Structure formats: structure tokens, C-alpha cells
Length: 479
Ligand code: SF4
Ligand code: SF4
Image 1 (spheres, rainbow, N blue to C red):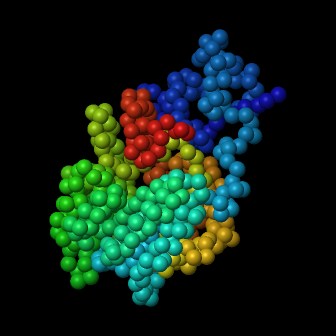
Image 2 (cartoon, rainbow, N blue to C red):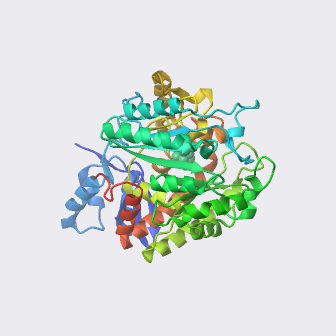
Image 3 (spheres, rainbow, N blue to C red):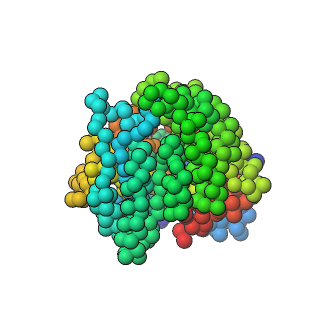
């Protein structure tokens, strides 16, 4: 006889209504309180036969129980015993056959700023020679991306650094070449650049806008916050230099809107005010990330992380309010979380690094992601001779969440997946370790995201669909 068990769930309560978050499937299921209590009770006595489950559903009229049982099975609230909870076969993923979607090109190692918290200064005591990518290496990188992208119809090239605009002349050469090569294969290339904004000139802005290149600007908020750590080599502040250069970029409202990325250092107060300020400047979205540094002066301690959670909670309330009024509210961290919940895709890795995403240094060497560029341990081959398949397969095998013992039973594992490899390197001593220093934080932040998700799913499901479309995903997951 077939036996069943109640899937691992986390209850989310919003306005007196219960929702079950199905942990392994990253899915959400609305449920009345008595049925949830019954399921919790049944969950304690596993495994169960169909008859035992039907008899336990006392809150449901007897004639409806059979249909309800089938609904629970369909939604995977009930699963057959011994059924794989993740449903994934991972043997293939370790092999180097995943299509390459995104290449991050380090156009140069050099930068015209000397931000105190920059991760580029952390990995070596020796002065590092600054390298600049040339056209030949860039063209090889484009060829490599197209060749490795399999059946993907759309691929992405990101211009990164150092400060990529120090090598701006390479961008048009890469864009033209990539468009021509990709179109010969029936593919579309999307372009993006991440810059500190200090070198934007009218002709650069015009080029970026004209070519639909997405722009992310690293800007830490108000002048006093920004200038604490983001300075020129002579120690002079950069905010007043950057702001006028941004105006033209941000004024072009009929073009692709720019995004701001804020690094949070030390004591992250005024986060909602920073977001408000940057949106008013004309950025479409603002994303916040705590600094990833081993230096204790910059790192956010427990108290600072608690403060950040309060600030994010306020922003989540503001977001919900805006959504109810049908307005867009560009808080990237929450948008990313809501889109990921709506898509419901279960991943065995925290991000695309080493899967469909790699960074390329100025000499054409491949690394897991932009944060690891230049570090031998994370070099995965080069764009001339291809991937180091053995090293890559070993990384994919070792980095999988199933190897992170602490994460296996964690209710938030399909959202967090152990966290960023670079942060784990800095904070936990190895990229393969889970980021245990922020478990409680990510759990509470995920709860906030789930609460907003449940409210929107009931009140304004079309708003969630619009968010997915804005990120290039289909409105209906799986389409
Ligand atoms: S790092 Fe912590 S919060 Fe994230 S999945 Fe692992 S145990 Fe859970
Ligand atoms: S490892 Fe960290 S920094 Fe690199 S892509 Fe993943 S999340 Fe981003």
C-alpha cells in the first residue's frame, strides 16, 4: 500500500489568513487554519496511508475529502513517501554542459577611485599590475560566449572593471562584433555596464542610450555617506563630481532606465531615505548590498544587520503601499525576491556563478564571477582554450547545497541556497561553506518577502506578473 507524508512546510500568516510555504518546491499554498492544524498534526505521524489522511481531515466535509486529498497531492503538500523532495537529478549538472548565458568582461583592472572597501585590494599584499583588455581578447570572449551558449536565444555581455569606462573605446568594438556574430547564429545579445559614474560624458551617455546598454551606477546615497569611503586617489570626495555626470543619463527618461547599487557599510541607517533620494534623482531601481570585506571597520555587525532588517521592513511596507496604488517602487532587493518566489524555480546553487555565468579578466581568463577575478583558485580556464572541465565539474559537485549539512534541514534553503560564494569566502573562510553568520537575518527577510508575496498574490496578482515581465521572465511560471 502506498504511503504518504506531509511535505516540509513553513506557515506564513497575513491578516489572519494562513499560507503554507512548501519548502522543497518553493511554492505557496493558501489554506484555512483548521486544515493547516490538521496537516501539522498529520505531519507528526508519518508515514500515513490514504485512508488515515482522509480520516484526519476532519475540518473538511466527508464528501469533499477525496477531492481535497487529490488537490494536496497535486500541489505537493502531500508527497508519496521516499519521493525525492527536490525532484532533481544532479548528475548532469556537474558536467560542463550548461549553456553559457552571461559573460562579465573586465575591460580593465584599473580604477580612478580608491574606495576603502573595494574587494579588489583585498586578495593580495603585493601591488597588482593593472591590466587592460584588448580587442583580440574581447573578440575571443564574444566568440566563446556564442559558441558555449547552446540553444539559448538571448545572451548577455556585461562590461565591468575596475572602472570599465577607463577603457570605453573597447565597448563599441565589442558591441558591433557581438551583434554581428550573434545575429549570424540567430541570437540576441543584451548589454550592460557597471560604472562608478565619474567618467560619464555626453557622448558616452548618448552611445549607451542609443545602443540600449543597461547602466548600473555604484552610488552610496547622500554625499556624506558616499564620500566617507568613495574617494579619488588624492583623497578628494567623488559625490559632487559624479552627480552632474549622472544628470544626462537620468534625464533620458524615454530610454532604458539606470539602476543604482548601494554598498552598505558600518551602520546602515537612512536606507529608506537613500532609496527615496536615488529614485528622485531618476534611477529606476535601487539595490542594497552589505559590503563584503574581511576588514572589521567596514563590516556590518549583528546590531547593524538588525538595523538593516528594520530598514528593509519599512521599505517592504512602502513597496506594498505603492503596489496597492498601482505604482512601481524600485526596491530591487524585494523585487528580486518576489520574482524568484513567483517563478518558483528550485536551484541547487545560490546564483549562476560557475553555471551559466562567468567573468573574464583582461587577459581572457575565466573566473567563477566578477568577485573572484584574478584569483588562481577560482580560475576555470580561458576563452582561447576553453573551460578547465575537471576543475569546473569539481566546483559544481562541491558547491551544491546538498553538501552543506547545515542547510539541508533549513526551511529557507530553496530561497537562500547557502548564500554568495564570495561572502562565504570572506566571512566563513571558504566559498563552499554556507553563510551561517546571516541565517537568522535571511530567514526573517524571506518571511517579510513571503508576507508581501501572499498579500500581492491575493490582492494584485497582475502586479507580480508585471514584475516578472520587467525582469525578462514570463508572467506565468513555466511558460
Ligand atoms: S546559509 Fe543558513 S539560512 Fe541559508 S540555507 Fe543555509 S542554513 Fe539556511
Ligand atoms: S558568488 Fe556572490 S558575487 Fe558572485 S555572482 Fe554569486 S552572489 Fe554574486
